[in-house]
Amino acid sequence: MGNSLGNIFRITSFGESHGRCVGVIIDGCPAGLPLTEEDIQSEVDKRRPGSGPASTSRSEEDRVEILSGVYNGRTTGAPVCMLAWNRDVDSSQYLENRFLPRPGHADFTAFTKYGGFNDFRGGGRFSGRITAGFVMAGAIAKKLLGLRGIEIMAYTVEIGGIKARRAELDVIRTNVDASALRCADPAATEQMLQAIEKARAEGDSLGGIIEGIALNVPAGLGDPVFDSLEGDLAKALFAIPAVKGVEFGSGFSASTKRGSENNDPFAIEDGKVVTLTNNAGGILGGISNGMPVVTRVAVKPTPSVSQDQETVDMEKMEPATLSTHGRHDACIVPRAVPVVAAMMAVTLCDFAIMAGTIPEVIR
Image 1 (cartoon, helix red, strand yellow):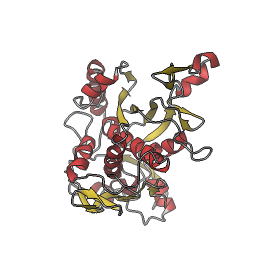
Image 2: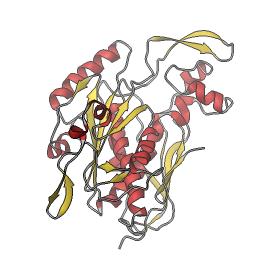
Image 3: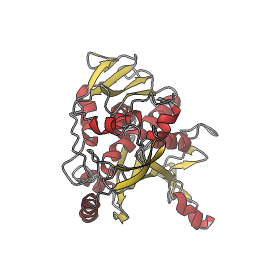
């Protein structure tokens, strides 16, 4: 079972969508880090559903509890275990349609792999619900990275083909948390909201793109060739349900450029080696080069739609029709934004500890 991620700062995810709880265990967290449940809660609250057309009607409080690894307000060096209880659970439709796999979901593949013994309610381990634990781990990783001035931010740049305008970092910091869709462009946000409302009214859903940036990442993080910074970041980001694509820097558009256009010229700035552009996305040869690490993540449309869809009855082995009438997001992109930031933080924190940039004891 691949429920753990990382080398030294290693996280293990647990829980199911309609089980008793969801959470995470972190091994390798340095001792001495000041930490409270409120530190974690402020991050977890960012992935809770809002009140707009994009959001699900399932409303979990997601009150974080730290069960171990913290004493007198500081981490002890022991595994940190955190969870949130599942309270607002309705499994009736999942029980009714037990043998009708939902198109676009992992119902069929999970049934096949685990012989039907998997917890299928709400998608079980394959639900976006488990990302609450990812964000808990990310909250600690962000605090550790912050000690070295490393900042992680993520935001919506596209929904349903509607693209946000490029924004300066200060504008992103100011606008994203105030936006219903975690987008820095207010005009694009309004267009996106209208598109989501239209899709919801038609019993459909929309996907989009999230951009993540890590600032002040030191040069030298990454262990090529099989433990490259890009490779481990991509692995962490692909663990987020609904993520179907990850690119860095100029990404796929690099294939349309000439080398002279895509190369990033080197220069000296304030006594440091920098690049004048950042088509590499802050990574060369699988190693951070000191420039911002930039990634974009493609999120597919929510597969739960209320239109009739063709499926099969796995018990009777015959064709069937399924219409999903549950509590689902018409667009999960805004709720995935803090998860992208969290998984970037977890991965970078692991590499920073391995490199000695973050010590084993915080004094």
